[in-house]
Image (cartoon, rainbow, N blue to C red):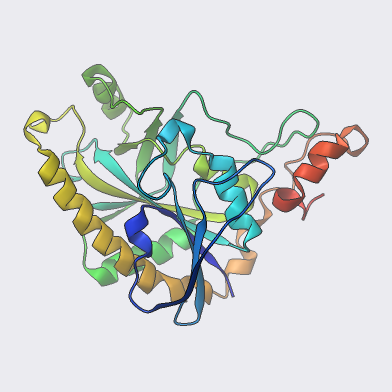
Length: 287
């Protein structure tokens, strides 16, 4: 059975019917993740929830330990990762309340560690298709079953933050045909690929970015209202998604789980033993 990990806000794991719940601390070679991981079982399906910013939203996007977050889920036996995050819309037709199942990214982050590999053991994974299409199809079916506004595919531009974009930047990203803008899915998606985890991103639109002529009239109360509604939908999504993903007979053959097959470039006799040991939990299959 596949184990599902959910990276997102604290409201996502408040699921009716969740049993055997407990918080567990996980240590990784890259330090501590954002928080303890909340484990539970829903109708026989094992779930692992990780608050990306820590409980109470105390860690800004640039300071999230993305490597430790992904490594912690991998260490707990997670095979499929659902990323849930709030975004701004760069398209008129993607109104607040819409869920976008992202299939492409543009990485505009500047300060974040984006790879498990490094000096002593180099690897290059493909990011041409940065999310798992199999997992994405499961997400789309669950969203459609929930009857919420959803879009299949879209480009997420990830900025460094924590500040929002300038008007010039917002217009630039629209010119690049980006669909939504956020601060958290990179390098998360890159690291999930290196860890050979299936990864899907659900971008929940809360507002229009500053390009929109009515952006300045949006109130905090309006954004919070959309956030609360999105959290309710996200909980239903997880509950509907879990059994389908857990029992997917095609998961074992997913190409995401063999992303490292041809990725290691450092000659075996030139690999740093300390780096090899550090990477056992991530790349042990090919080491």
